[in-house]
Length: 283
Image (cartoon, rainbow, N blue to C red; front, side, top):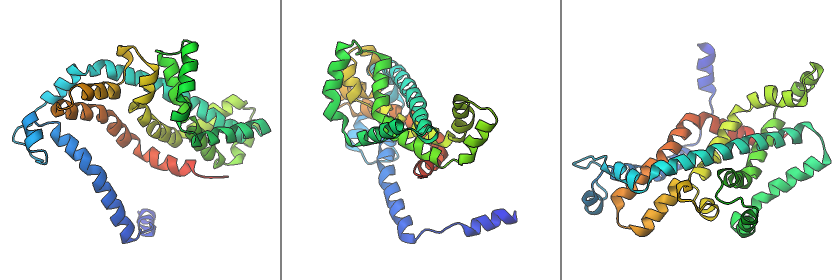
C-alpha cells in the first residue's frame, strides 16, 4: 500500500493550460459523436426540424433497421471483416518480421531497404494509384479479397515497420544473446521471445492501421467492381449520392459503421497508448 501511495504522489502533474487544451479538444471530438448518436434514434421530422434536441420525445430503432436493409450492410460488414483480417495479418507478420530483421540481422542491404521503406511515407497513395491499378488489372488481381487486402497492407507498411523496428530497438540486446546461447534459432527467437514482448505494438497497429482499412473508400472503389465485395463506407457513399436527404437512414448507418471501431478502441486503448510510446523509442 505504501509503494502504491508513493507512486500516486510521485506522478507528474501537467500544467492547467495543457489539461484545458486537452479538455477542449476532447469536447470538440465528442460533440459530433453525440450528435450522430442522438440523431440516429430520431425520426426524420425530428432530425430536420429539431436537429439540436438531445432528448427527443420518441427514441426509435427504425433508422438502424432501414439502413441495414436498404444499404445491404450485412454484405458490407462481411466484406469489411474479410479485408480487415487479411490486411492486418499481412501487416503484423511482414512488418514485425522486417523490424526484427533490421535489429537482429546486421546487413547493409536490410538497412538500405528499411530506409527506402520509411521514405515511402512521403509518397501519397494518390500519386501512384493509377499505375498500381493498371498493373493489378493486367495481372488479374482486381476483385480479389486477398490482393486488395495486400494493397491495404502495402500502403500501411512504412509506419508498421517503423513502429516494430523502434520497439525492438528498445529490447535488451542480452535477450538475443541469451537465446543464441540456449540454442534458439532465428525464427524461434522471433516467435517465442520478441513477438510476445511486443503485444502493445501489435495492439497499436491493429488500431491505427485497422481504422483506415475499415473506413476506406478509395481503394475499394478502384479495385473492386463486384457489388457483394463493396465495403460499408462505399455503400453509405453510394446511398448518399442517390438519396441525399434521407438523414434518418444516414445517421443510423453512420452509427452502425462506427460502432466496431469505437468498441475496438476502448478494448485496445491501453495497448495503443503504450505502443505509441514504445514504437517511438530509438536505440
